[in-house]
Image (cartoon, rainbow, N blue to C red):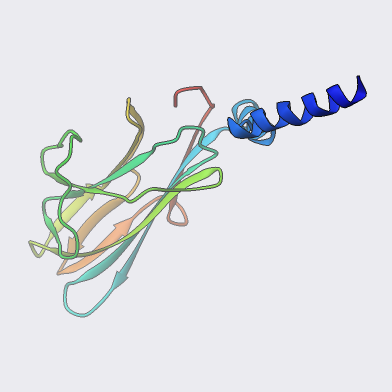
Length: 178
């Protein structure tokens, strides 16, 4: 009888491993759902270069994410030309006066993050403050919209103004399907 239970235990363990049943993954999933809020971070940094070109570094993060697929889209005003990326022409709804650029989101443990560098130049000498928009979404819905950062140009010098130390943050409670 003891040999039967030993063989049965090994067969049962083999079946669990074959179907990729992972107890630790389930524990981490439930711990994320119960004890951690989902946080969206947007960081933008502007670096001046020669002439009127500027290098805009955009970093997006979904912290403690449960969903498998997240997408981030950066909306840059039409008053600026992006030299190193083409506008995104997918199914994202366009906003008049903006061009859409998709971020390449990658999963890294509990976070989904992306970092993209845009080389931009203003189309006019003087442009008043215009918000830059970032939308986080999954396949079903838009999860978060951020308009914290504003871009302007004065005498061909482009600046970006944002909250505090250059990082916008918003937290939401976890829900299944988000």
